[in-house]
Length: 117
Image (cartoon, rainbow, N blue to C red; front, side, top):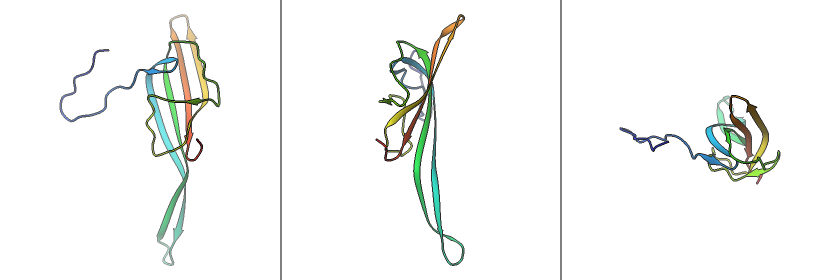
């Protein structure tokens, strides 16, 4: 695909196309954490702490080589931008889809957790 021409406010468009053994077509990310609150004598919130941060990524694309990544394996992703997590990227699921009418597709579910490198 030729480079897009963006007119107006600068925005992000597209993504880095290559990720290991696939030509990436989409990346989806969601971040969660646990929360604990301390209340003051009036019942108002005095302090909040967020812990056990976790980010899940779904990376989909077309397979370009034999999949060498294993469940529980680590990745050095080119397309994943963290949401403040500081852990390593671990593969939790791999879905391979083959069809007589389409290219071979891969889907990775990748998780990173704070403090687990």
